[in-house]
Image (cartoon, rainbow, N blue to C red; front, top):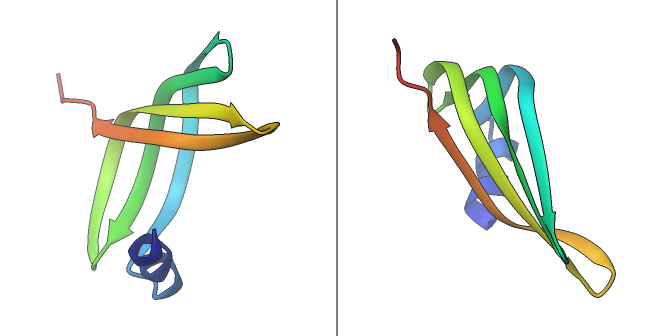
Amino acid sequence: KEQWINNIKNQKFGMDTIIHDDIRMDQFGNTVVLMGRSTSTLHYNDKTSHGPRRFELVFVKMNGTWKCVGHFVALVPAD
């Protein structure tokens, strides 16, 4: 977590554009799974990445507060 925050603060990581679509949410008791597609341009360590990605986030309600407990992103292969 500390490294991730430092990368953002030191401008080693950043997003130039981001558009989410095809979003789906499923709730299972105190757990929510959010899935969708992201079209974005980001940079990390002076390298730029473009393209559609699939993402998944998992949230759990703990002590009355929703917490993100999982995050996954993968590039969508070209046709």
